Length: 205
Image 1 (cartoon, helix red, strand yellow):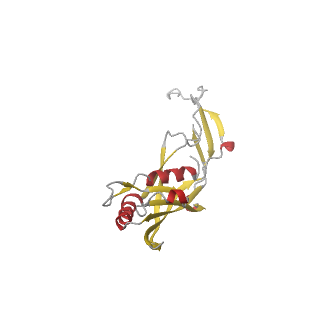
Image 2 (tube, rainbow, N blue to C red):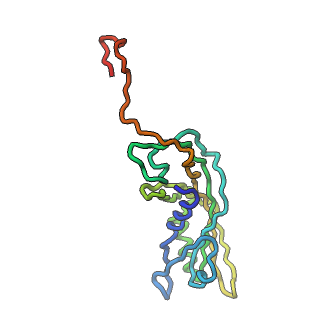
Image 3 (cartoon, rainbow, N blue to C red):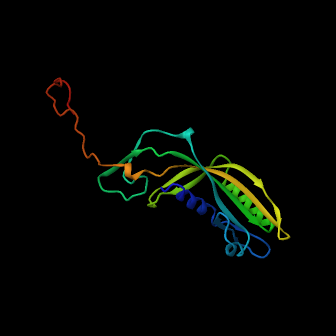
């Protein structure tokens, strides 16, 4: 998996597809953009949400030390028959994101807030599905709600409803492919090739 890029895309995928209802539209899509969308995008329609990466920190509280062995470098390269990669355990990292929803209609605001708090940011027990680069496997990361605040305001003489969610996604650094050791897979293991010293009442293996 590609560090940060994979989590970015997974978070946008998680938030995409939300719809709200009002007296004029029975299914109004909620747009999703990274950071603050440009003027052309913002002029399209409310409501929408933005995703912003606030911080990246090393998660020493859950760091492990050792070696991993697999056949695809954590889903970043296509497997080679009878070959494996051995590499150090990646560095544990925490990604802190801020998701902000914007709406003009109070019903849209409440619908978005209710959906995110009940189905997406489930306190300290949420999760984020992150596919690997090859699309062959999906890993699941903790998605922790750190803070939720209301930031309603007046913009251009009109009400602007804002909900701000601060979340942490558990992650790990990308695998250092240049330091990974590529080796053959053992097809057989022989134990006790010399059996003359084994007592006669014992069975050699």
